[in-house]
Length: 107
Length: 122
Image (cartoon, rainbow over the protein chains, first blue to last red):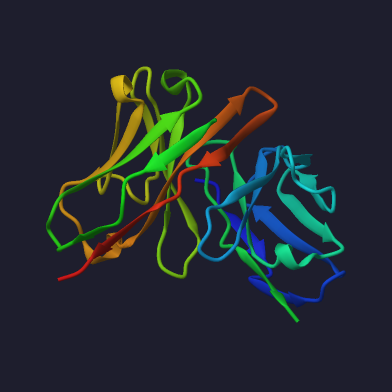
């Protein structure tokens, strides 16, 4: 099975900051990497698929990058509604494991 | 409207059986993979497995293999997740999700159910 490791597990930032979350897989998944956002008590929401493609309706301040084994999610100009937990997930071969999550908290 | 509506919260005792449901509408259920994701209290998302309703082809997580069973009823556009003998460690919120799969363009869970909270306690 492909292992997925996110870092950091949490970070503190202020409104307007730019933050980057990393996701690494144990073997190459080309670009089969998704990002989800989950706010407390809510359902996960798909943000980005195929490493860089924004899901419909997702603001352009979210950007995905990377390929192979190393990927990033960058949020430029954090907004109050962006404070949440973010998960990466690979979709290369089953099981499509998730990373452990990165909680973005208000500084 | 595309949506997945899950059954309500459950409280069970260890050793009991359980079947939770996920009813789909607004898309072709038979030809769309449906996935299940577990989230234990205060923890992250865990991929449980996926099922293809047309032929009930399933792919499940080795970590949960044998502990839970996925099934569907195509006539009801409904997917199910069931346990034969619950354990306290099964306590979690279980989400169903639509797997949007278009070769070389997307393979992700793009629509999610609201979640079913399962509590197993003596």
